[in-house]
Length: 416
Length: 82
Image (cartoon, rainbow over all chains, first blue to last red; front, side, top):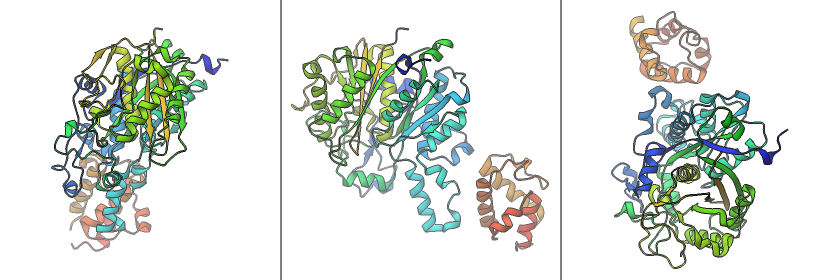
């Protein structure tokens, strides 16, 4: 019997739909080039007119246009995005042959099918109860992406949906790691999705004063660790990784991006939205992830940060990294994918896991764009100058969510 | 409205909702066995038919509609002007 410590978990396929690309590879190339996916959206959405925020980051191609019309008809936009990312990842992994009872899905979301819910409520009010779609519930339920993908792939070992706001994507991947280590499952489709471009959630975030209002320079609005940052930019997207036990991957000769070596999950217990300024919980997530992976701080060559461009959150993460790494915090770079993609909430951690896998594969890291005037409180190496060649032995990916969720994933180069 | 007109209308609705070719929607076709329409999609078909033909299809009646011809007969009897 294999013990859980003996089971290693590998990333054997990736897929993503992001504001900078319709697939994982084009997104990665855009990120390396420092391309922003943030645009004005008030020409597209009339309802934005009275809002203080008129920018956001949406995927390049309408997801419904990339799916069969009938197939897409009863799917929330967030499910469409997840399905597209899944199909890419599954093909990228070579469509692993796996027994139904040893194949699972773990797909998170921060908010779920809220645009479906609100659109159907509009129909209810305007046209009456009879006209509300009988698919409203399966379209809006937060487990819809996980269940839809499980149906398509034929997964019988469970369909799970962690919900931890902006930590959901990383939490899904951490949960998948734990499940694979039980030895009861061979392959897991893991990731997350989000799309909430509707006036109500937009106003909700806007009234929290969480969003950037740099409407006149959308591509410069997401500026993590810059002195002039003023909030995050709302984005949509999906990221999927195919996770597989080493034994299963080796047996079929799978190509490998990296090893998913560890996960660390903590909670602040401090405030429903504000990060604990001491950084204790976030630092503990990083420390736990490294310990779980059997890594020392000096083994880490890169951190893909949460880095959302909020005044408070950006400093809290830097302080947490310093707390977790001590003086070693200055010896490796960190960068923010969200400086280019904006913040896709529950999808972000999964998209960034894809990015870390690509970083390890290509020995390259993408920059943090728009860091023009360094915030003195954020004095680590955040790669402001452009992409960088970097051989990565191991890397962390941080995600934090409203509710005090802290999730760190640890990835390691896999040399067989 | 003739049987033929109602059939054409139903075929368009079913094509819109399920993607089944309109030619496959023949009077003798069973909604479940031949056209593979599940119960949720059948609700959508009924609501669309109500709107198109200006009739009411109560749930008790809907449950009895097994074939396209059943639906044509019900819609005619429910008061679509000839």
